[in-house]
Image 1: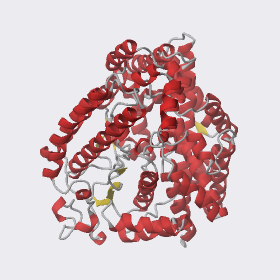
Image 2: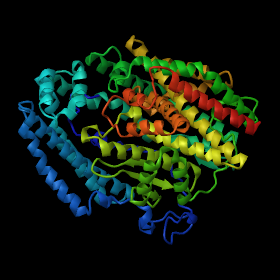
Image 3: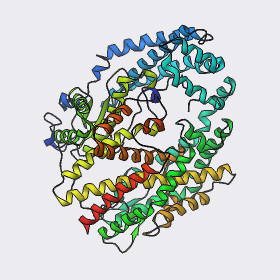
Length: 639
């Protein structure tokens, strides 16, 4: 939320959000057929120096050299001091206000570029101490600049809405800040005095300690038992390997991993319950201090999303649980089981048809799948592929997974670890969606609107993924490959729409209980969570009692009321993709306008321009109908 701090410089806010999809890189290196590395042996992860230049991003487009970066750092360390010249007089005239904001924007965007270059250089090789040092220096600069800007929001609020509106009316150059200032004053009633805000800022670290405690406990201190794999060998169980074990065709491996994981969490159930309870109480504290009626109201207010939308999402998914149960019946038949257990939900129900796909083939599939977005989009995609936006292949010590990043002063960048799989094709499409969103926004919007809220951040990426996946499904001549792709589509919707909404329902329950003064003990949390699993699965699955502890391993619960946006995001994206396929040019035009809108309006208003209206259940219902259609196709193929 803004809360008087929107004028501060925060690296993960003003830089494009680092959209990491960690854990996506396989360990086997790049297939020799993918032409990733000159002379790299098959099966061996190549060194950075062995990757051909055309498969590397061009960070030189940000800074020609490290020396250039260091000169810019030195200039900003000195130059940001000029921000202090406007303290106490920011609203004295339109000219002064414009000078101050222009200087702040210039310094902020340059800091953003410094940080992005340093961090992406480090991501190329995480053992390079030089770029770790660069990253630390850039973060230190952010802290200094943030402190230097801290007076701005309180001074503007103190000047009053009438005074600021008058100044905006005096200058055409200032008029662009109209929505920006309106948003600041919209939340004014929830902003405390400067002294009270300072106290809350100091309290931030201890009040957020629950998340740190949970992270350290589950990532460092907890030890999981070894299990026996499908070959009778002893295998190490960990959170990172857990889903891989649940995807194992051997049911015994799946069961042993499931029981071993939850037996470990059960040992720490009271400690983790205390941690989550503290996090929920922290949110309750902030909602009271900020003068909101509830934690959920406070969390949704930043995006100006009504609580009714959240409730409608949960209710609409509840009303369509018959589709989930139908899918589970198909899964049971496909696996040949008399009854499903909770550890059978990720097992492959269709034999893998994940054929080798070179990067060059992936580029072709992505362009073919995104052809409905029009010639301009395809031309800009060609530039992304040809002009050094993408770091394609894995190399030794490179950051794993995939993300889209970049800055207002640069074109977007994409980090990949391409492994010649169909999933990598879809990941490439996904990250290009983020990058094109940023590219079009940066091309049209001023710096202050170059970001976009989390509520819409996954829409463009999922539109791309949906279009490319539908293209692959439509072009699959082999029934086995088509079944594989349909199952992937269904699993994406199940995991994103059904599962994340179940998480959202759980959050609503526990925060409501805390607001009413109920104790969030391990028993209370487990009872609430088990009840939701019974509701979603009991008709078709033997709901193992151990699943009642799953709440204890979900880190998103420490960022309250965040996960529902995964469900709304996929619903919006699927609606837009359907409209583009059905209506053609008019739908593409409105979607391209959305991509260029950035943060210039509230998320729900921006989505309305694409035909997505969350004041009704229609977007979520539409996603359910798409799920049903894919399910019908897969039922015919499986029998």
